[in-house]
Image 1 (cartoon, rainbow, N blue to C red):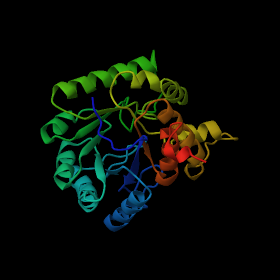
Image 2: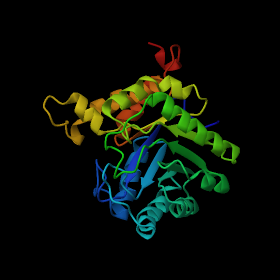
Image 3: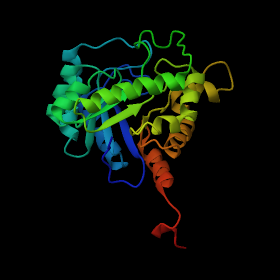
Image 4: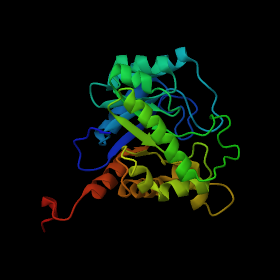
Length: 272
């Protein structure tokens, strides 16, 4: 399944949360003007895609009604779509449709159910694995074989989408969505298994709790604002393993990392 790119490096998707309650930057870009300005900053930093979301998917997040999500998302998509590729991060068909009308060309779908919208509207689709809902997904998630179960689920959904007419299908293992720290590490270690399915892989580890847990010296995870080094390390690991796109809060440093991952010996810039 093809994923269009003109880059010699993995793509970088910038996270634009138009929400008051997202785990990392909730409220900072909640207003339309603030969100558009932040999107412009990510474009200047080299983002290949800006992912606009109006409903937090963090553990414990409260659902948002369709009307409110549309109010948050559509004006931002409209303002940015002429400047960069825009994706919409939603689980709602009505929001996906309206965002495509506003200029979005990728549906980033944590529910892995919206492929009929992508097929009907001739846009790309990201299928993400999530076990449970934001209210329940971190309540003791368990698997017999997390890599096999996640891969099988994503391949099944991706194949359905491809048969249904979606011409650009991505898969995302859903790091942190119904997974323990160990599950997340197993999935990162097995990126090549997901890449081997033939579908382009997107990975999102940016600032997630498991990074803070792994780097903490005490009992509490390191705070969100101290997780950039771990975010870069895990994104680089994923890109070196074959992930074609990473979803991040910190665009500029990740673009630099992606550029280095994409370099090959003998490139013209390698001359002394």
